[in-house]
Amino acid sequence: MTLDDLNARVTEAILRAERLPLGSDQAQEAFREVGRIEESIADVTPADELAGEIARLGAVTAGLSAAEPLRALLLVERYLAENVSPEAAAKLEALRADADRDLAEAALSMPPVRPVKYVLQETA
Image (cartoon, rainbow, N blue to C red; front, side, top):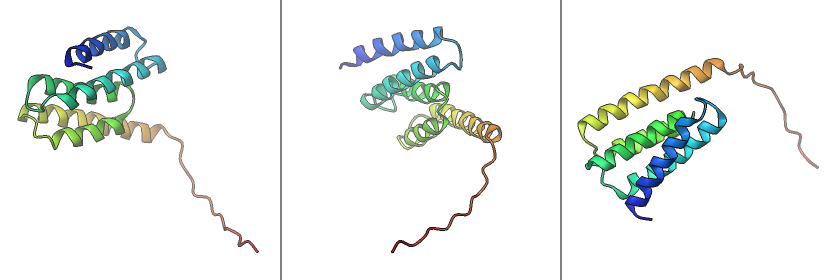
């Protein structure tokens, strides 16, 4: 698939995702698709080119929109290691802060987990 094909697909996927109710399961799945395409674009474009920066930022943003902050954090780490421009690095750091905040909020809304003691029995 060519870069032009990927760009056309990501544009269509973004438009589709943005038409869905914010935070809905359908929107989250649509943003996962956006993220996959953005990652594909990032894989074929250099980090120091504008198209590469846009794809990298788009992949992280799509991860956040898909309610996948851990995925977003993983991508931030990967893309920062690619020597992006200082401006893109600052934007990635801001997205990292958003992902960290999303994780903290999710942790607060989760029910507490209590340890359960269990002893394994030896088999004869």
